[in-house]
Amino acid sequence: MRTYVLTVFDKSGEKLLDESFEAASNDEAKKIGQAKLDEEGYNEHTHRCVSPDAKLILFHR
Image (tube, rainbow, N blue to C red; front, side, top):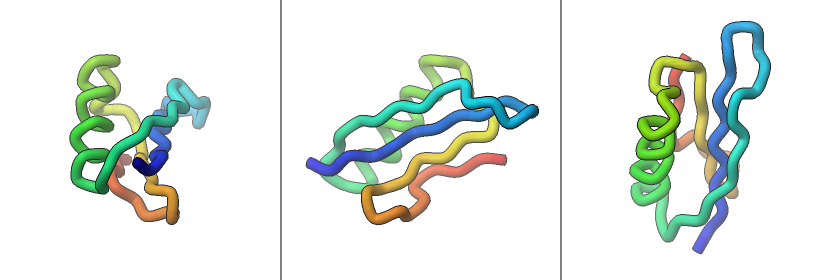
């Protein structure tokens, strides 16, 4: 398992969510990250999910 980081920002740049989670692959991490965004209602906020090797898995501006 690898550790991914999901971060959500508001328009002023303040972090609304900064959470780590584990996933077996980038595809699984993308699904988990999207589910967390749906759950918290942050789909339309600026967000990113990065892999342990700093690749963007999810991004919305």
